[in-house]
Length: 290
Image 1 (tube, rainbow, N blue to C red):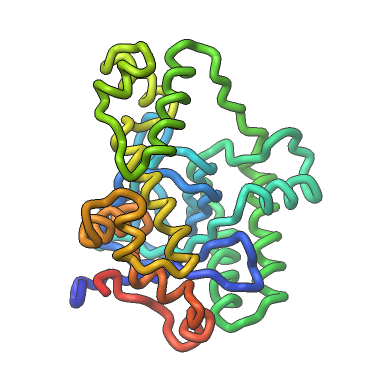
Image 2 (image 1 turned 90 degrees about the horizontal axis):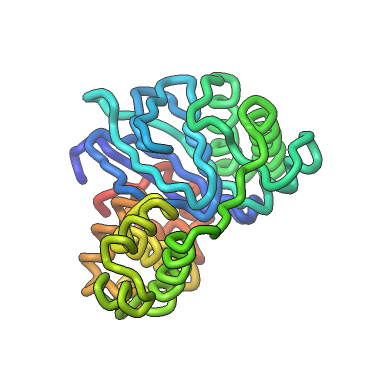
């Protein structure tokens, strides 16, 4: 995207295990419906982001945080012509649970009860975490991250409801998901999948969407990108990762990966590979078009 004004960098800092980091400015970027294994804590610095979450559009502007729980379907796009600039941290469920147990009275699985929280102070903390990671200041990065997560849980957190598989439709959706996970590279058609489960195609489509927030084909694309991320982190080339997760070729992986992760797989792997930590100290942003 040379000359577009958009830029993004998705990386990890080895002293913050279980945490992904992102710094980005997007103008025309549109994130398709997707999920994350980790929590999303996105601190808006400028502009406005609109994201669909929980059945309605949410708006996050300067001084606000977009807060997404793990495995929660959502989208993302600019809410104003100039786009939005933000920094984000993605702590693992295990880390958030550890912080919640030590610093809050939340019982059960902790999560965020609100998708948008106005809190300029914590927005500043998130950007300070990213700055500390850039500078290799492990003590500051870890401390500020824990302070930020504690503050957000105290202001907008609570126990997350557990998804119970009670209805026949929900049970069929869970079984369909397991089949798609197992047969990711060569998935069945909706008709075949439904027939194997003893349910009509449209009944399965409706049950799957109600249970997981997206239809089976969209969930499969999301799952493929998620698995591709693990392969790239392990050193698999983007071309090989594309084949292993079931994309036709690398360009298909590139397109879907960028629409979910925010950067193409090559840029993602360069930041997170063996030389990623050294490169991160030399380079603040990665052009999304790389």
